[in-house]
Length: 43
Image (cartoon, rainbow, N blue to C red; front, top):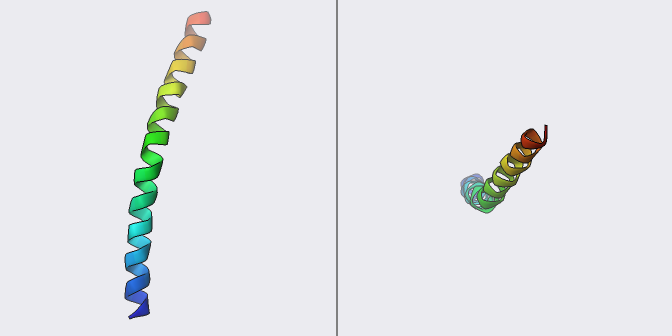
């Protein structure tokens, strides 16, 4: 019983974590691409 509840909570936590980190990953990818492109332009 407790194991099933723990599994559900774990799945919910994982989903929340992915939803929360997705925008930050997108921002990091945008800034990472912008910084790498500016570096390549300077060189």
